[in-house]
Image (cartoon, rainbow, N blue to C red; front, side, top):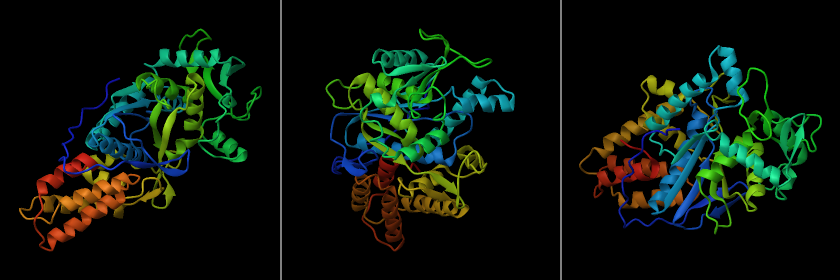
Length: 413
């Protein structure tokens, strides 16, 4: 599947040192340095395309965009893969509700997503992969689990024995009661009769009437959610056989910690006999006016809608980066208004002939990002620079700062 257009990233002058990056690892529940290396492998879970890109999606993808920008600025190559869950129950249900073909619905929302990511100046993945096109890889992954004796059948549906991975549960740290509750809320079926363990995960669902199906050696059907990401990540990121881990970073929203990332990591570990990812990195959720933003509540704010109303994509980017990425945050009209004002002010200051010193600003932005991608702190540094410029300080290079903001934060004016 095609991605969106490549993003130009200005080179950062060599006099600016790039410190080692530290990221909060959800599995370790601690800030852990990312080892310096020539190549990084990053997998970020993509959308299920039955609705347009909302601000929760955007906030997640912007944070990983900044992580990738930082690693690239260090001189490393970044191999970046993102999936699209273009076959799933919510997609099929929405298509039936709206009386449209499920593939047409998926394609229309994927096109919107591409446009939103391009508008937000997000670096595209090297491989942007739909589950439908990756079906042979998924079937092969299920076969590998079969060969490891880690699957079993319940009325024709194939399940993965989660405890065939001895480390199952160590990435999400949930007690059994919470795990079962969360599993049920997020697409699992802990109450199904015939399962060996309530948390065992579906990897292949046998064909149902009037639903899409694919042939396999274990019967016609379609995959479960978690095996799709395992298969796509392990194939397209081409793990280094010499590395202790298959990937360097597995990322997504905090709602994916369990069951999705726990399950996909467990399946991958069983297939490869080594840990799936060195770092598990998760962004907090975005709410609206004091409430959780969700499809069920009908209070989603869509990126494309804001842009169509004339809001600058850079103002949206500023607003979503102006927070601690791991914490849940609220969206409001006042936050957007403040961000629009900040972007307008930044444009005016970058257009001045005399500006406050900029080398120290760029250095401080880099330091903030090196410490768990502290974009809120980085933007505060920019705000302070604007204050200094407006107070009459001089000696800076506006063009160089403008390019650095693009390189490191993706703010392109």
